[in-house]
Length: 241
Image 1 (tube, helix red, strand yellow):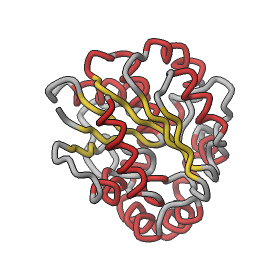
Image 2 (cartoon, helix red, strand yellow):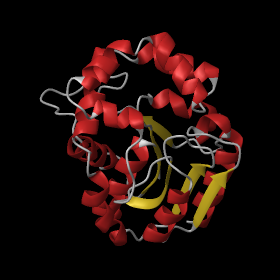
Image 3 (cartoon, one colour):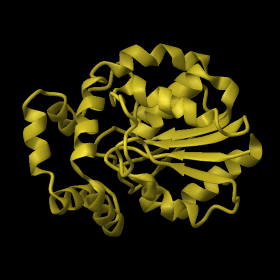
Image 4 (cartoon, one colour):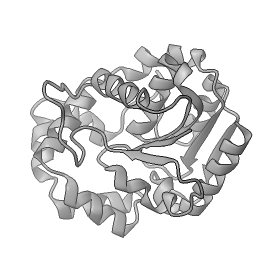
């Protein structure tokens, strides 16, 4: 059995490093989304559907069922994969993102979703600007600097395509949350500047999650700010699955 970790945007698989240092099990894989520090397959359109299909394809390579963990866009993709292919999943944990038709995308997402404006914003996303902004939002300075070093033209292009495919993702995918039967753990930071913490409870209710965990005095990147606590919560979640 494998524990599969899925990162968000604009992160790479390295965002899980601090959590993985505290995980005792060794059957762990941190995936890299196409275009996020890794090449994208030929013909890859970088839409939300492309990323879901890619993730499901990755999960199919492991001996089923797996324990899957996702943050930010990794959480949205995780929830979609669990909704569509519950046969591949033993347990799931996700947070830092809503899958809710009542959610309004944050300002940066709305800018990326706007033609021409998104391209202009991407031109301003230097490594220094990225690191500074992410550190303010809750990523540790070391992790923020690491992200800044890996944001390249391919990642920027993938971000624009992904977000522009997902303007109404909540309305499109929310209904299928009712199909989830695997035990779940929802993780949020109380001070997340992108997703109000009230969406943690809503997600937990819609998925019938076993537990909703909200870290006080914590921003968007709970895996960076609370790595030991996240690892402990995951291991308890897996032990009960």
